[in-house]
Amino acid sequence: MSHDEKPDHPLQQALVDMQMAQAKSGERILIVLEGRDTAGKDGLIKRLTEHLSVRNTRVVALPKPSDRERGQWYLQRYVQQLPAAGELVIFNRSWYNRAGVEVVNGFSTPEEQAQFLKDVPSFERMLVESGIRLVKLWLDISKGEQAKRLEARRKDPLKALKISPLDAVAQDKWDDYSKARDNMLLHTHSAAAPWFCVATDDKPDARKAAIRHILRHVAPDDVAGTVKAPDADILFEYEPKVAKGRLAK
Image (cartoon, rainbow, N blue to C red; front, side, top):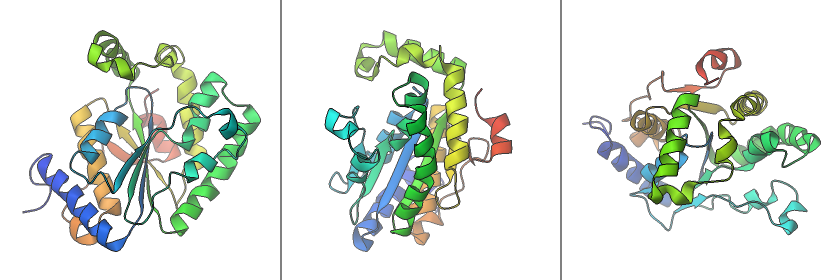
């Protein structure tokens, strides 16, 4: 029986098998999750980590930089969070803040943003060449579905901690976010560190596709080989010409 013959549980078992092998090999795994507000990063992280070892798994969601950090090299505080041997690290937003939310809301200068887009492909290549297994996922969502989720978030007291001041501009600045996303993907997709895009309007299917992709890319061969490829209509590698018709506008 393959790991993926039944929904969810076999994929969870495959994640456990992956981490058990990782603990023995000392391999370092880094997953970067980016996407619009409400695209499902938190839900995917919950599914990824619910059966994994707390000792060997870290979720990184950094707050806005301190005054001291603003005086550092931009990537410095992220470097400190990179995985050690045998560790899986998941960035819930990452250095790509500089290419997204900072662009749309003017939190950094155009010169700083341009320098970031120039620097980050080389930075990520160095990570990969150092032995880190890097997976980058852009979680995409339609404007209508985002509006529904933002409204549900506002009405649900249990989701109060998810509410951000930036929620108020997510819809108003939709086109600006689309432009920033397209520019970011175009300049930071590379052979060493490619972007994969996930359509997340259907949450369960999106989570399953993302987990399958991660397993097939970073799990050992005996685990990865038992996991079916994700649905190509839900998860696909970024390509400029193809992305124009497949990413939410």
